[in-house]
Image (cartoon, rainbow, N blue to C red; front, side):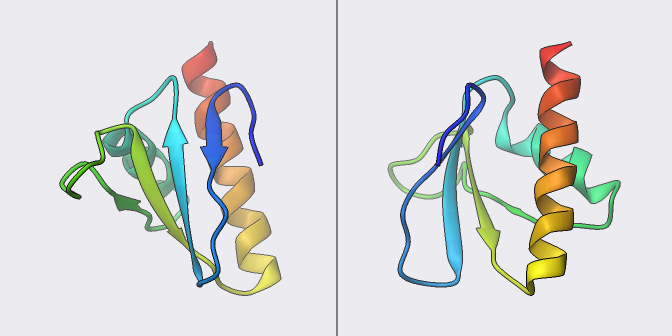
Length: 79
């Protein structure tokens, strides 16, 4: 899945790796934390930059709420 601001990579486990285009991983982590979500900033992973984050998949309800939080954070960054 992909939009102008985020690209999700296919996964066979309960984690999704995402590359961000207009916001750093640290910024996104801080913004979704305001909605009480934790996501992993992958800037210290070998081979990844500060533009990568990792999402842990949960229940459908939680995943949808997280998606809304991420969407809101990305919209704020786009002005």
